[in-house]
Amino acid sequence: MYYFINNKKNEQSMLNFEQWVYENDELEEILGKDEYYELISRDYKDKYAYHETEKQIRRLINFGQFEQERLERALYDLLTNEDEADTLETLAVLYDEYCDGYNFLRYIALTFIMTADEYKEILKRDPIEFGSYMESIRKEAVRLLGFLNKNEIFIDKEHEYSDNRAENDRIELHSINEMFGAKEM
Image (cartoon, rainbow, N blue to C red; front, side):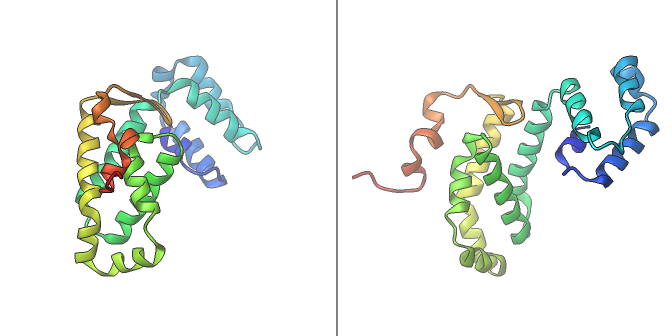
């Protein structure tokens, strides 16, 4: 259900979801008769089917846990993925997440967005330059993963989070110049 919500609305995703609902009889036990009946009786070819299905799923599932796992995977990917193009794509995703409300991603997002497209092309071809570029980003990914793992940053629901860190640990919110190595005048 989470993947249905995060996929783009298209006819194929509706057909796949409908098939999945019919193939999983245990949904009745998990969701209850009324919710299950609503899912299996829906006309998935109707023009409002996606909207109605999305509304039902959002009513049933707390997306916070899934969002937290997804963000942790993306940050972990920054530490482990050696493919330059894939890593730059992950950075683009994290930038979008920052724009959608995950302010704790600020340093990573701003580092990525301030990188010129021409330089990104160089990074894709030069592993040494790429490693140098990723050094501070990886440090920040480790720092954020620590906070997420200790539930000091906790995703409550999609694009909303609780930040239980000490004020001095929220450096991306109050000390961005220091994070970028700028000297205060």
